[in-house]
Image (cartoon, rainbow, N blue to C red; front, side, top):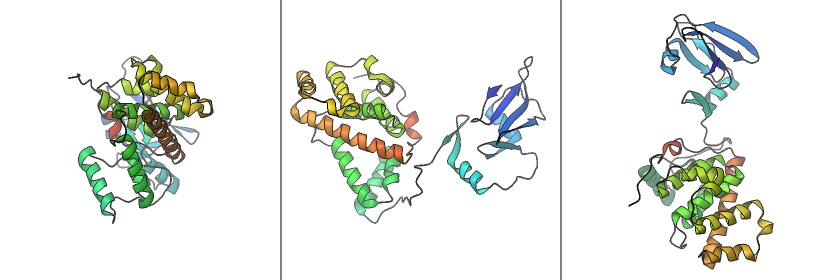
Length: 285
């Protein structure tokens, strides 16, 4: 058996020829076997699509003229909830709460900001779209984020700020922030492995003493904030952080602990573009 569809459909191949002989579909606890009329040499998705049409996330039906049945409301919801990506079905919603999200605003500042995102990023980050149901909250979020992560008020580098975001998200297992800010780490560092190393285990990464101390402090502040003591702050000073930079580390870590919980609580998903961004090494100049 070769698994091809999320928990539902399996391809059966001949042991001698390697050709597909049938599809086995598990539909609500019952096995439904559909024999393929024309044996296919290789089980590619494109060839399979010639014989089968996707109906819902748990079934496929012959497209040779057979009338398609009407989907139930729950099946329609499932179909909307899943999309086919690289031969698998993954959620594609912005967030799980059915709040009214908007793309354009009467507020000129927000409208200009969304247009700037479209121009520079080629997308609207889903976190902004999720907040769009409440323009006032959205504006506060954007101002806070831009000041912490992009502003000149801090002397922390942008890479250091993004590394803090990923380290916090590693502890909280926040899918949205691990993907989105892992992409930012790859872009700023020019190293496609660094985002994953911090996301999974920064301790095995090649980091400077400054970066390692910063991430150690960030992880402890996220896991056991009640254990932070003067010796933890002193270690940061020893590797060159100023008191203001220590404040900034704490503030960024606190912001992402908040945003991680919001993103996880509403099942916020990252834009698909983040998964493909900056996957190649960029030589340092």
